Length: 66
Image 1 (cartoon, one colour):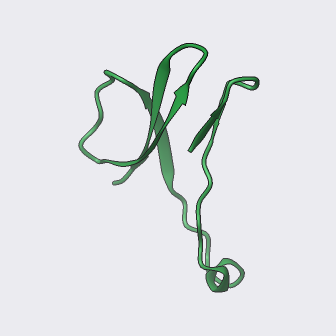
Image 2 (cartoon, one colour; image 1 turned 120 degrees about the vertical axis):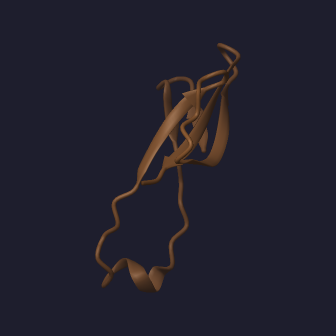
Image 3 (cartoon, helix red, strand yellow; image 1 turned 60 degrees about the vertical axis):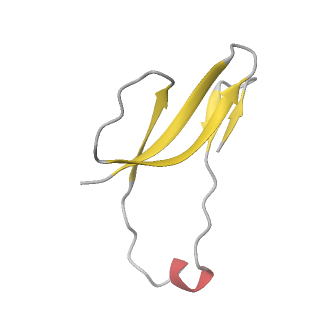
C-alpha cells in the first residue's frame, strides 16, 4: 500500500498466482480506507497502512468481508 501525494491517491499492489489469472473466474473483493481514529467494522480485515507525509495523516486499508 502506498500513498502518492502529488496525485492524492492510494495504490495497492497484490500478488496472485500466475497460473490462476487466466482460467479462473474473477473474484470480487471489497476494500475500504479508514483514517486513524475511524471506527472499523467487525467484518474488516487489516491489509496495510500508508502515510501522507505532507498532512501527517495515516490511511489504513481493510478488506471488507461478508
